[in-house]
Length: 253
Image 1: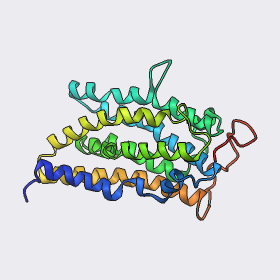
Image 2: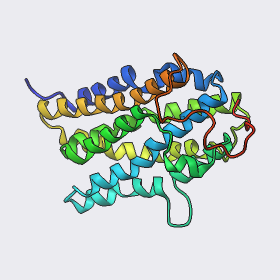
Image 3: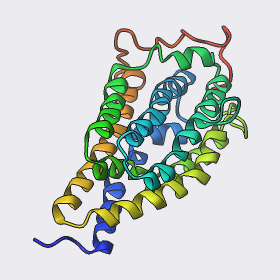
Image 4: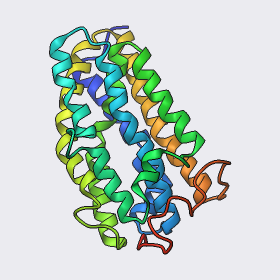
């Protein structure tokens, strides 16, 4: 069979997001609709931080394999977007502002103690995927960024409407990603469309994007199981009280 046309292949990738992106997960509907308890919000912040903290590690692994200086130049801004400069900025620091706003000690969150085992397995599998797979598949896995602006906008709207902790500072991570993600995905999508020039490569790239949607979905499945229904927290995962900034709850609902 012949390769799909460029437009057909792009539509195929976008359809994966339409069907499989984690904005459709029940946990997100609960969170954005104001239905999460303070414990559930904090559990989400703790576990999502593990993913955020590994994104620059994933990107560093990708860079280490790029022989093209042009590709390295285009990609390396992603690390600075998340890590920031030595003394300021970065998505990780902004996420820790969210942690503080919901009543968590940022140092506890940054330690990654209490992260769900399934979160670790899923995120670590993504980092390994990018480190080991061909560059086309590694980059295609990042194309969930195609669908991220919509979920960030919905999240900002829902959190501001439903939670006392939500303000300009605590939601600065999501606001900044509205600016960063379109730039990143424009380059990544162009590169994948340019290099997936056979049906075999297109199939591999599509499978990589499906893998990444599974990584994101499985993290929310773990959260929902541990902290919503049936509420079965695995040994060693956050117990709802550790790592608090202060003893009283701080407006997460």
